[in-house]
Amino acid sequence: MTRKFTGDQILVATHNKGKLAEMKELLAPFGVSVVGAAEMNLPEPEETETTFVGNARIKAHAAAKATGLPALSDDSGIEIDALDGAPGVYTADWAETPNGRDFVMAMERANRELEEKNAPHPRTARFCCTLVLAWPDGHDEVFPGVMPGHVTWPMRGNNGHGYDPIFVPEGFEITFAEMDPAEKNKISHRADAVAKLVKGCFE
Image 1 (tube, rainbow, N blue to C red):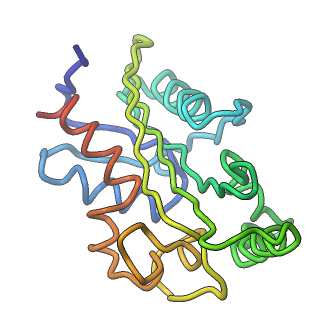
Image 2: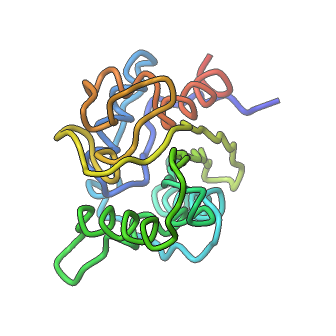
């Protein structure tokens, strides 16, 4: 039996404005006020695990302990089958530069490695999102979400963030970045995880 969320404020343990906006929108119907980690001046804990759930747990528990609020964290990324599941938990790391994150560079790397392997088409991949809701007493609930699809080249579309311009979700001809954001939010890996979270903790 999952623990129900009974408070009126939740901390979303992310410094990513896009993610925070998405979560605010998704949790709006439940009358919960959402605050981000940056507003609370929380440092970003080191993500030392090799799984999405491990890293999401680190972030959620660190934020809940620091603030005394229930904290929701998300660890997400793209797994490309022909690259043995890479970049996976290192999805954001592939984009790191001394001047911030460069996702065009990361997408170019993914395509270059696929070309070097002469990977057959369709180049199947999936976006994964694991949500962890942690309470200050140390309890947590875990909700994994997934959106299967394939990667394409060249990049297409100006919406979305991260690797969206090269990811075509299953059942569609367009990339996440070509999709209306509201449409993407209905079918994304994060929407899948949030639907499970809502069912488990909010309904």
